[in-house]
Length: 358
Image 1: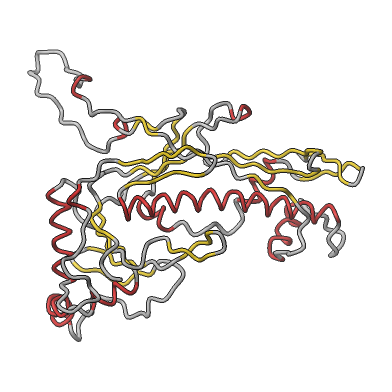
Image 2 (image 1 turned 90 degrees about the horizontal axis):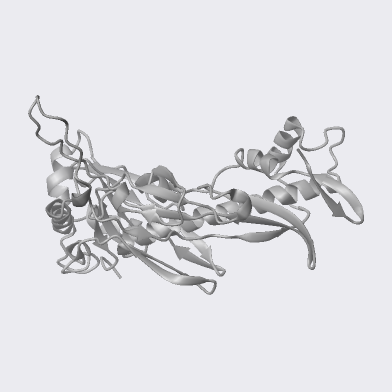
């Protein structure tokens, strides 16, 4: 059902939150590849903290019990230590203004769905306000998704997440990644006598030694991929033996604002990411240009904790949107709340660092 606001001293019916949610689902989503690749699962937790120990991906071993004896439950006293970790709490709020920059494809969809008038090709004042609502919800939700991607990137590159702002008490989230998994090569890859392939092998062995699993993905900048693929050792191991048969690496410039797949070796996928986001008007990289990370854990999850807004009834939601009209300043406001936290399934499933090149 529509929601009525007072605009220019007259009632105007605009979209309610349910309708705005329906429209948002038809929008092209923000590119969240980094999050989707390494934290593909979602868990709703109706608490204000994430009980990480209870969400361990480790598998119990069934107890040995004679057939004529009763079954034995797992001993709660020997359970993994439970750490309760605060998620981020996000509350972007923006004022709705009439839209003057129209997505024509969206307008056609809205007309077909009956959200905009169909009798004229000229947008009414009401139509422009509705488009402004839609843009505001999209901006809020995209900012939430972008924050989750940044949290995932920070965890992958540093092993922790530092949540801090002027309106949020500093919260450093660390899952206890083993110190030996913070890796820096003896010789940076942009220097003479560097050994990129040997470094990757060393990183793989460190993950195995620390119970992190089998490496599945190599994530790095396109610049560092250039150093690795031109390493004489990797050419000897993978390129020359396949010459004229099946070159293991995709021939691509790798220049993109999104992820680029370059092939694989030893069943390890090679991905580069040079994408940036806007930070106070400055283009900032999601992963540093000097970063190289070997990753075994590709089954992490994003925990969604309870929303604190009274109208949300403590539900764990990706987004909780609410809109209202206020008199001072006179405006329609849209608020979006979310309480996410990326959680790895294996704390030792990543080895790497940011000092592989200048």
